[in-house]
Each structure stands twice: as structure tokens, then as C-alpha cells.
Length: 116
Length: 75
Image (spheres, helix red, strand yellow):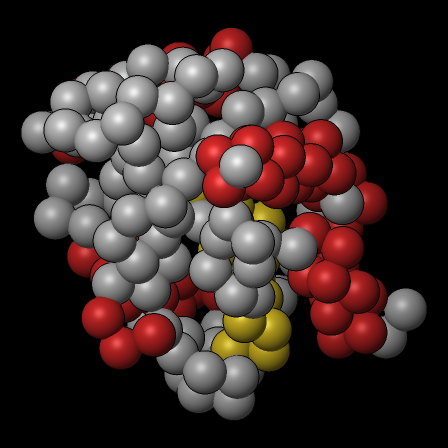
């Protein structure tokens, strides 16, 4: 999707607070990376950079501020997709993840918006 | 089960979005109050930095290009 549409839409990954940090006090989950909840912006940037590097993610990655201002503004945790039109208004609002995180649905909405 | 589903969702997202090797992003957590902007409403502006330090302001894209925002983390 990124490679297909990057010339027609600006696509960003917005790295937000950890959903399941290892120091979160909750149940440990297997099969995923163990990461403590960053307490500084620099720590969050480091985690995000490692993530992007390890997984060779090509999408430009923005890092939310440590006060989670953007995540809160978009009610975007733990994961969510928005598509914004040229007019600056929300064109597509996915449900919050994990169950509501639907890439196919978002891609269909983007195609429709682009008239494809 | 929820973790599996979350991993699967973000894994699929990264593969589809970036055509890159498998990603493991999962999550739940604090999404933020208010439910976020609805379709047709103005998107909240923000100014955030890319990993290379370059600053991006959402409002700079107005009247220029659509923007796709994929929120998530590695856990």
C-alpha cells in the first residue's frame, strides 16, 4: 500500500506509547519484543528507530511526544488508521486496534478517495 | 488471543503498507479521550519529528495532498 500510494498520498507511521510495555505491571505477553515504556522522548525515539530498523519499515515514521498529545487527540491507541483529505478533514477513520485495525478497509477508502 | 490478533493486525499492516518483512506490532492501551475526530471533521493539527529529526506539521499538507496516519507501537 505504501509503495503503491506514496506518490499520491503522504503516508506516515506515527509511533505512539507502548501498548504492552514490559514494565507495565500487567501480564507478560509472549512472542513480541520486550520493551519498557519510554519515559523520555529520546527513549521513545530509540525504541521507534530500533523497531523501524529491525523490521526494515520503509514508511516515514513520526514519533509522538512523550505526553502522548497526538495519540490522545486522535484517540489512536493502541493502533488506528486515519485518512485525511486535502481539505484537512477526516476522510476515513478506522476503528481502534487490534480488532478494528483493518488495512484492507483503509486501502479501499484511500482508493475511493483518489478516484481509483 | 487478543495479543495474537493484535500482532496479526499490525503484522499485516506493515507488510501491506511497507512491503517489508514481517512486523510485530500489537497493542492495547490508552487511546485517548473523546474518541478522536469523526469523518468530516477537521483533523487535529500536530507538529512531530521524523526519526531523522526533520519536523513535520500536518497543516502543511492542507490543499496539497491526502495524508494517511498509521498509529502504533512495537508492543
